[in-house]
Length: 129
Image (tube, rainbow, N blue to C red):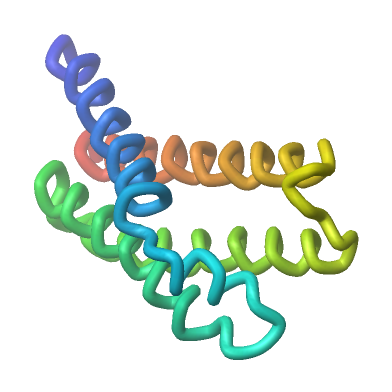
């Protein structure tokens, strides 16, 4: 059990870094604007969520190979959260000048981090069971 604490730290750090890279470094303009578009949003959203799924699958393979399928779960969850954010933002016509735009952005990031915690907890559960 003493090795579990550093393992939890590194696992959660890896998932947090993956999120930063996939959401801010590797997401290009086509993905960012395309996934928010009223039409033709499917492919850009799939590519963006695919970065998250691939990253999670690689982390799972490094820490707990039998958890590879968590990459698919992250793909689906990330896509659902981002699509919901786009629909809410469009419905309320939120622009960056509005405080509600940033509240929605922050809530989106909160949901993604909760997802990372759940993914990490699942990986730890798979390791100890």
